[in-house]
Image 1: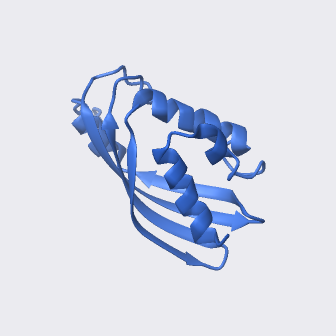
Image 2 (image 1 turned 45 degrees about the vertical axis):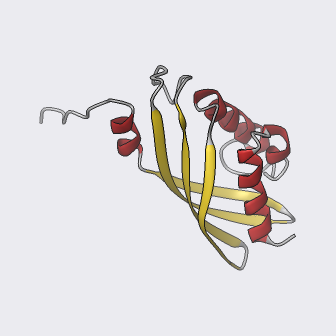
Length: 130
């Protein structure tokens, strides 16, 4: 399986809400706590957004790295990163870079516009006094 196929399969498993099988694609030495840390993180995401759906907008690979641009959508009916359930729909856009080795993802980095997510959930950001 190519590195791009590994990452595609991971997002397909997200859409199936299959934490266990998705976790098998993550190497034990991967940042974020290896496959167990990844499973905990993914399970928390599915608890917060039980109807989560991922659309893979772009994917490309170069050597051992794969870059993606995704759109995630769902309804926040569970706690999300310290935010109590709001019942509101949310659309999140994220970019990732994965490094693959031996048929697994061994490094992962993602960027999500958290400020946009907070706004969709009804929060306002007030600058701190200087």
